Length: 282
Ligand SMILES: NC(=O)c1ccc[n+]([C@@H]2O[C@H](COP(=O)([O-])OP(=O)(O)OC[C@H]3O[C@@H](n4cnc5c(N)ncnc54)[C@H](OP(=O)(O)O)[C@@H]3O)[C@@H](O)[C@H]2O)c1
Image 1 (cartoon, protein in one colour):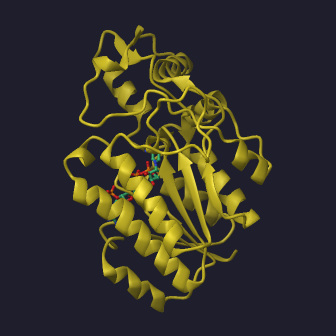
Image 2: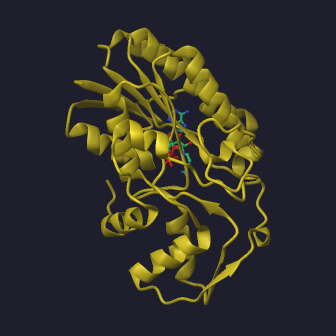
Image 3: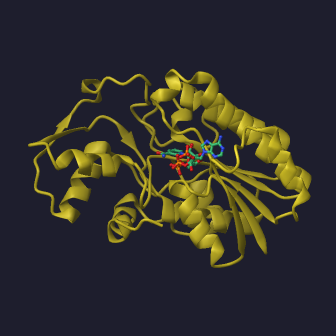
């Protein structure tokens, strides 16, 4: 692999993708405001030399606002995904698209596998599922990587929101009945590089290994950071939000683990990696 194009390279995941892929090949990044992936202008890129791989980490990721901005969410997550997959196809390059655990309704009580039937509860989840289909329709050489509870340096992620809240609160209530598979961007970037090396196209659940509640996640994090604020487990129904989220969306990552032959770190190991890198802004 000599040349990789990354859309959304300024985002939380995009920055870690750039970092990793830059160590191996030439990386060309596109993001707002220079390039809008939903604009037909994107086809002008076909005048540029064809890359060996296209990675789409651009997305509309505001889960709650998406309930209001329905058209915008679908425009970026479905139409943008389709245009990128098509451009990649015309270049003769495979494409990577990231999807989400929010394509599931959370009614299951064992980790979700690739062959489980999606049933998104939110506009964001529906728009990402529509994006999956568009990518598969427009580029046969696709990797669709469903990830979850993503966090990375400089991102406005759940951990950072809780840390900000802890600076003024006397205690912090965090739900212990919302279960998922938190995933660190550094590890997702590594999974991406390893899966594209296999050329085994398809759908994968690409998360750190294991599951936890949001309460366990933040409690473990605060212990490492020596934040002594009391953390109180509570029910997720206490937090009323515009978008409905699955109560249980742990992901079974065995398929990607077996394919890339990498013992993907657990969420606990991933958290330590993140904490060691916190504050990094590039
Ligand atoms: N964050 C999570 O918890 C989570 C969970 C599961 C799956 N995912 C998926 O993982 C992927 C990476 O997420 P992330 O957290 O890294 O997202 P992010 O930090 O929001 O990054 C997305 C990037 O895409 C850019 N973008 C948005 N609309 C665009 C457009 N029309 N044209 C060009 N660029 C555009 C954003 O720019 P602006 O910042 O200027 O809008 C941003 O730089 C996404 O596919 C997301 O759906 C995320």
